Image (tube, rainbow, N blue to C red; front, side, top):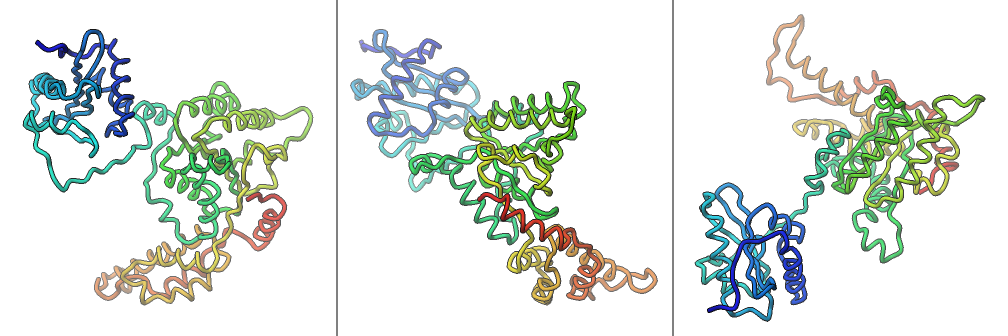
Length: 432
C-alpha cells in the first residue's frame, strides 16, 4: 500500500502548488509555463494532486484546446521522486481529460527536468530535433475590454521600420525613449529613470503622430489617443472627462497615451476672470504628475505651436524631453521617394532630382505629390485623347515628368517663416 494517494485539485491546494513551484525552481529548473498560467489552469482546467498525509507532494495540470491536450505542469517534491508518483499523476490526469474528446496529449518540458521517466512510462514519445518558440502577448486578456472602451488598439509591429528616412529623429527617440522603456531592468542598474512623458513639437505634417504610433509599435504597448474635442461633449465637462479618461488608462498594464494638438487644452493662461479652458489646463497640469508615478506608461503630447503652450506645462518635472520633429533632410526625402514610387518604375525615375525639388517639403507634402503623380499617370494610361481607352501596356507607371509636375502643383505646408521660428524654438524650448 502506497503512503500517498491521488485526488482532484481543490482550491485549498493552492499553497501546496506554490510550494511545489518553489521546490522546482530551487533545483535550477525553469518551468515552461508561467506561475500565473499554472494557477489559472488549476482553477479552470484539469488538475490532479498527489497527497502524502496532509502535504501536496506532486501535481499534474493539463489544459485542453479542441482535440489537443497539453500538460501545463508536472512536478514531484525532490524527496518523493522515484516512487512512481509522476506516472500515477499523468495516468489520473489523462483519465480526467480524455473524456473531453482529446485525440492527443502533449507536453513541453525544460531540458533539465527529471520527469522524463514518468512520461515515457505512460507511453509518451520523445520528439527529437524540435525547437520551442515563445512570445509574450503584450496585452493581457483582462485588459482587452478597458482598452476597447478607451478606443485604444494594438498597432502593427512594423510601424517603426516603415517610418521612411528621418534617421536623426528615429535615433533620438530610440535612445531616449524606447531603450530605457524596453530594457527597464537594465536601465535601473545604470541609474536611468525611464521617461514618463514627452512633447513632440514641429511644423504641421512632419510626422509627429506617426512617430507616436511608431513608438507604441516598437514597445508593443497599446496605443491610446485622447481626443479633447470628443471629451468636450461629456456631461461632466472636458476637465472631468479628461480626469476620468486617465483614471481608466491607469487600469492598463502598459500604454502609450497620445494627445495631438495639445495646445488646444494647454495654452497660455491669462485674463480675468479665468476662462473655462483655464480650468482644463489646470486639470491637465494635475493629471501629468499623477500619471508619471505609474510605471509602464508613456504620455506623448504633440504640438504645432509650442510657443502657445502655457509656461508651466513645459516645466522640468512634467516632461522628460521636449523633442523637435522637423522637415526631412536630403537622405530622409530620398528614402520617402523610394518608398512611394512603385518598384516597377523606380529605377527609371530621377529620384535625385525629386529630392532636390522637394527641399522644404514635409513628409505629408511628399506623400501628397507622390500620390498625385500616380493618379495622373493612371489616368493617362487609361484614357487617350477624348476619353478613348489607351493600350494598357504603353505605360508601366509614373515617370519623372509626372512627379515634377505634381511637385510644382503641391502647396508647401511649412512656410519659410514657420521653419525659421521652428529652428528658434529648438534653441529656446527644445530639451533632448
